[in-house]
Length: 126
Picture (spheres, helix red, strand yellow):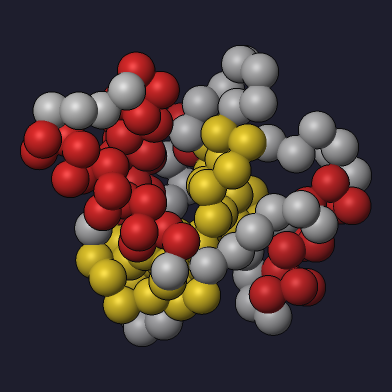
């Protein structure tokens, strides 16, 4: 099993915001959908980064930009702008850091990943 960390500041802030809204019972329909799908994807990722439902694969354009292998896993599939989770192994052994969460780029070529925004390595656990 891997410990899941959230990139700083964007991923940690987004997850904290969703969790606080869950506790307050004020999630919008879209936020609830994201919270459930992202939570499920992180649980699968923690247990097996290569789980078939995640469709995990390296995104070479982001790996070159980030300076280490960046992986993409599905939060959903077969829907308009299906959400994707971007992550790296580390910073320590047995850890995975979520560094991005965005809709799938429309352009399937590597230039489509230019707009993907990545967080820095974090120290927050989910």
